[in-house]
Image (cartoon, rainbow, N blue to C red; front, side):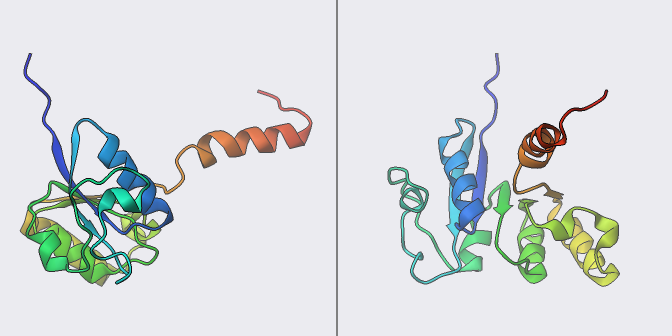
Length: 157
């Protein structure tokens, strides 16, 4: 049996969502943390494990996008509070696929046409893709319906 490949992943941001995805990457047996981008100087220079409540990983947080793009990662988990299309396009053009929780990418047709063209051009240059997902999986699809159903006094199927 051929072993399954490991994917080299960069975590972009280490706030509320980012710290959780960072921890998931570090703990996943088929993912290798390649780098960590942070927005604050207070976090720069910190070990990634320290920023998500785990033991040291040897991966040191940086604020330098050039360091991140030079890593040659397979994927960047892009989870900042605010979206920066210049950052996203640089990451995609560098050859890293992007998975993001940013709502701007949930529906490609809702993007400003000029921004969409930039993102698509960056994907073409890097041979990459971007995938947008929710930041709270399990809430809207699982927990919220249970709460709403329980408060309604019943449901009919």
